[in-house]
Image 1 (cartoon, rainbow, N blue to C red):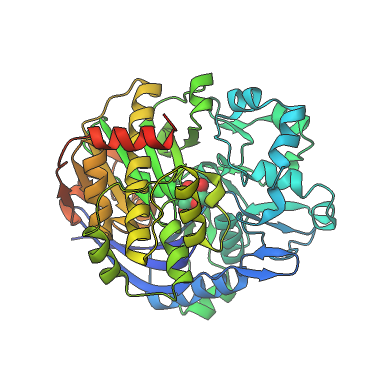
Image 2: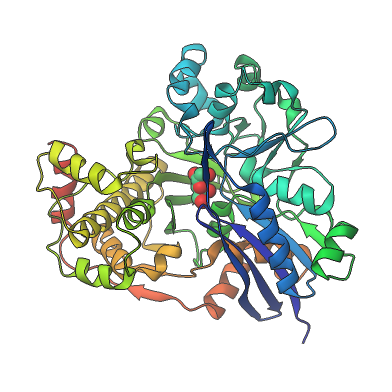
Amino acid sequence: ALVKSYAAVDLGASSGRVMVGRVGPDSLELTEAHRFPNRPVRVPEGLRWDILSLYGGVLDGLRGAGQVDSVGIDSWAVDYGLLDADGALLGNPVHYRDSRTEGVAEKVWASVPAEQLYAATGLQYAPFNTLYQLVAARETDQLAHAGRLLLIPDLMSYWLTGEQGTELTNASTTQLIDPRTREWSHEVASRLGVDLGLFAPLRQPGDPAGVLRPEVLEETGLRGPVPVTAVGSHDTASAVAAVPADGERFAYICTGTWSLAGLELDAPVLSEESRAANFTNELGLDGTVRYLRNIMGLWLLQECARAWGEPELGELLLEAANMPALRSVVDAGDAAFLAPGRMPERIAEACRVSGQPVPESPAEITRCILDSLALAHRRAVEDAQRLAGHPVDVVHVVGGGTRNALLCQLTADACGLPVVAGPTEAAALGNVLVQARTHGLVGDLPSGRRLLTRTQPLTHYEPRGDTARWREAQARLAGR
Ligand code: LFR
């Protein structure tokens, strides 16, 4: 049978990988060609991405992937590199956790009120939205000298092919796109002095994005021509495309450094209630909207693990599973947890301030984090259904967090709904599916999802116990 190979470059906040998807008429097999760390670097001017090391990792991965029929790239959202008039990169891309955006949103809202901004862009408030980053950078030399802005996957794609574009799903995280028209919001940009001419023309997932440059072929040992295909280049868009759901009555939680919890809809929800609940309307494949909330995710645990000198995680989770449930919880949606550093202390402090027992040992803190994440998952799944008028029967958990059985079980318990966990490499699989579709090997989104259901290992969790105790924990957090 005809089998084709697609390289999926997937860059996450803590590691990057190049995966190879082999797709046949009724098969999809994913293997890892290369995985490399993504280590943000703190320099005197702030927190920066080590973008050249990431690009080096991509090249190593393509070399390891062997001959492929196409390449697709996805990464975390909102961040970008600036190029000068000759196309050379002007400095290291700024990390979205950098402090330069502190207090910027308030300034923006003074000229465009938050309600108007939401009505025009549908984007939740997050201090790091590209719009706020650009306003923070307003007076800088770098922005003054920039002729082009490329989002991270578009920058990688440019280096690989020499061609520039702005892929739509990721562009929707800039807060400069109107989710109804799926085009730039000229009004928001002009009122805030953002030059939309910095952006390369929009590309849709599935569009051709050039071919690997001769130098790249030489460095990777690939035989040309190798096309690069635009995919849902926002990792969350690719991950949602790979949710192995059947029908429409499902919620998803993309777990990893973040938990992105919500629904797939046909149209954005731009109500004032939705804004107050901080739900975002990011764009997905095929005219869909990713209606979701950002929750701090396993970042909370990663940062604690770093503070504890990277203990063995499996053991810690076993101990945490035996700790009393819901003793103390924190608001895992709180932007107060965004910055790196001192995480165990910050979590303990949040428990103290809300009058709950203060967790002390690593196992206690781990349990507090997982209970808090499950609680935030519950709230997001409930709020999304209510705000969108879209009921669900099942919660799909995809991404790195599927390896954490305790988190999956607690999420089922908290939501009072069955959880289907998997696939783990959802972003890479969504990336592969879009490439395979462009090259005629799979059909529409539902048929891609059916292919995943047939080919990928999935784990089922049934809800245990009463959801009343989760309601009680939520009330405790809300101070009621
Ligand atoms: C997940 C993610 C989220 C986005 C955050 C910052 O990797 O892409 O969707 O809100 O990173 O870019």
